[in-house]
Image (cartoon, rainbow, N blue to C red; front, side, top):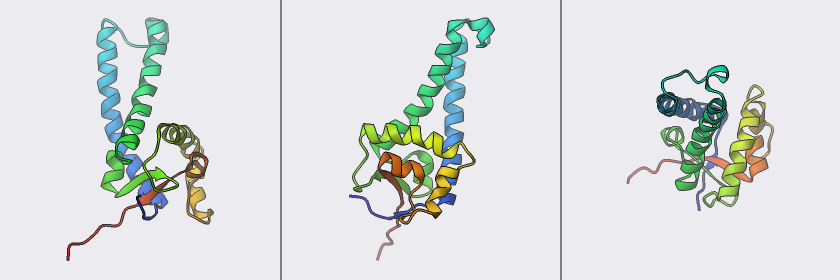
Length: 148
C-alpha cells in the first residue's frame, strides 16, 4: 500500500517533460528502424502506402507501451522517479492493466485542451485530476524518508 499526498500540477508537468525527452529518443530509434525496413524511403502517406499507417500505429504503440509497462511494473516512469511520484489505484495498491489503460486514454484527453483536465486537481476536494477520477487512480508525491 502506497501513501502520500496528491501530486500537484508542477510536479506532474515536470515528470511529463522528462518523459517526453526519453520518448523522443525511443521514437527516433523506432523511426530509424522503420525507415531502414522501408528500404530507406521516407515514411509519408504518398510514398509508403500502407506502411505509413502501420508506422503511425507503431508510434502510438511505443508511447502507450512506455507508460503501460512502467505503470504496471513499478507505478513510475523515469520522469515520475525523478520527481518522486507514483501512480497507484485509488486503494493505494499497484495499478492493474485496465486502470493503466484507462489512465493513458483519459490522460491524453486531460492534457490535450490546455491541461484543463489536470488543472482540475485545484478544484477537486481530494486534489485529483480528471483522468485520476475517471480511471480510479491517483498520482502521489512520495515523501522522502530521512535516515536517523
